[in-house]
Amino acid sequence: MKLIIAVIKPFKLEEVRSALTDLGYQGITVTEVKGYGRQKGHTEIYRGAEYAVSFLPKIKIEVVVASGEVDKAIAAISKAAKTGQIGDGKIFVSPIEHTVRIRTGEVDDNAL
Image (cartoon, rainbow, N blue to C red):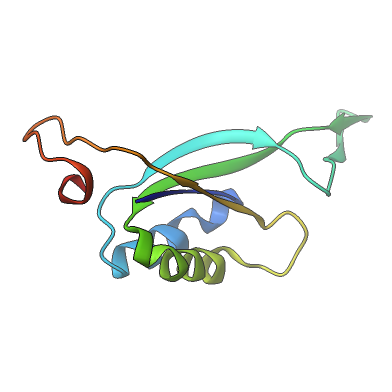
């Protein structure tokens, strides 16, 4: 099993959720986060004063998939989240050693 963490633009959340649901992934975790990459924030003007916004709003999506389905999930996330502009986000993949469904006691792949 693998944990896929995707950091995307907030307005792309529904498209990514839909793409993952269409592939049959039922459980995802979504967190509102702030950060920056190469875009390094931007400046805004508020009441006539200019100030720097260093951390931009992002959405972090976490989904656990079977090891054989990682490429399919990454392709779906990438296609749904891509705008072609700087700040589209990143996808990280990590191994998951053990999973337990609390309600039933099912473990590993059965717990997905």
